[in-house]
Length: 385
Image 1 (cartoon, rainbow, N blue to C red):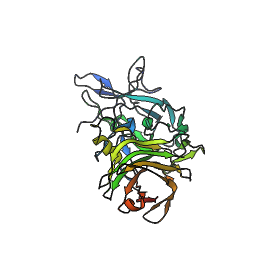
Image 2: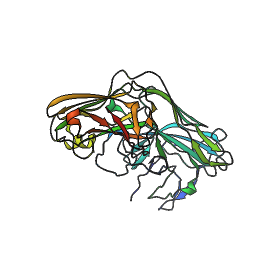
Image 3: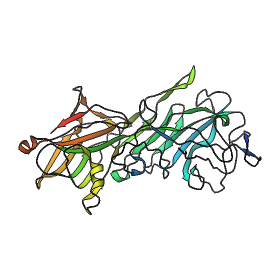
Image 4: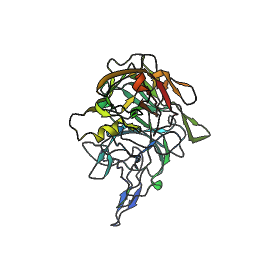
């Protein structure tokens, strides 16, 4: 499979205080070894890749379990340090000017490249090694600030947009240590590059629906109220001083107590509950040939947080044409181990299943059975209305 290529094009200058390596091109002319990045991977706990449903860029890929890589239209930031010998801590390494350096896709080189007025390339140092980290997207568009250091990435004053259609996947990478030009393949026709492995910093929330009765049930809207939307993220990275390649992290959000003033809209329109559970996004995509049926369908990327009694989901629907509305408190969910679920964690996808049961036709009951999947699995949660 052909790999996308990542070229670092910056201002036509080599690394500060270093001499670039050289490689021989197909014409026998020595060329500097360009510093490049291989295709970023999406990581979840315990696996090298997560099933990726297009959270970045708000692209939906319903009905598929395909692994999606980092999309071409997105940008990320790179942080780098240059050091003699093996990496021995971010603070003790010599910092480089690559700090919040934007990288974007350039179709002319089929790769990601920062754009400057001058153009040019970064080159590998002749003898030193380099270590890297990354964050995504490059533009946060919410007034937040980022910094990278010994304890990893810190993002201050991040806000989840009240408009769910503008939600994006906030990512941070593990460190890639002790990289050199010798680790790469560089010739006139092909460039391999430095691996970037991303992890998810937010919580993903989506919905599925199923109907166990004989009634015709149509979903009209899903809205999430009373959740927190501001906070500061800290990667909390530590390294073993005896072996710096061993990295541990305890990512944490310090969340502001303020609640979102308007609801997050997961869905507005009209789709029918089916016998088997199906994701709302899949049904919405299937019904797009009926103009006006689906006004809004969003996958929510929300602030990880402890859920309070204010956190609620309000579902409006019709049963055989009769309008209904139900409210569920999110922090009352019970998982299969009979433990209450009171929080959303970073990197976890929570699927809330709206089930219209056989008894609902008489009792007018509907319940939620959320479970996390694709990023990090979570046992099924049941919220009984």
